[in-house]
Amino acid sequence: SLTYIDQKRLELARCLASEPEILLLDEWLAGLNPTELTTGIELIKTLRSEGRTVILVEHVMDAIRSLCDNCVVMNTGQKIAQGSPAKVLSDPEVIRAYLGDDDA
Image (cartoon, helix red, strand yellow):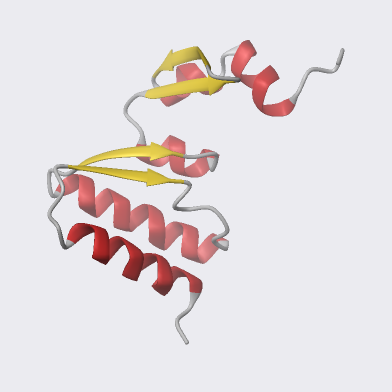
């Protein structure tokens, strides 16, 4: 039986077999333990260094900080922020959407 990260690697290898120009990873890092997360982030960095375009749909903040050049944050179907990870992750509207509103 494969470990969870090895299952993820196999899933990714199947996708890469068709040599896509753009790779869309939807919550690909979800559910990984800290060691697996580090491995997953490094794997995505390797794909990017090979010149692949990677689009992430992700909620793991460490991954966003490590991997993204540009972020778009959506909330209830609307774009609420766009820019560098540092800019976007410090945006008050993004913080409200991600952590909730104390007044709600």
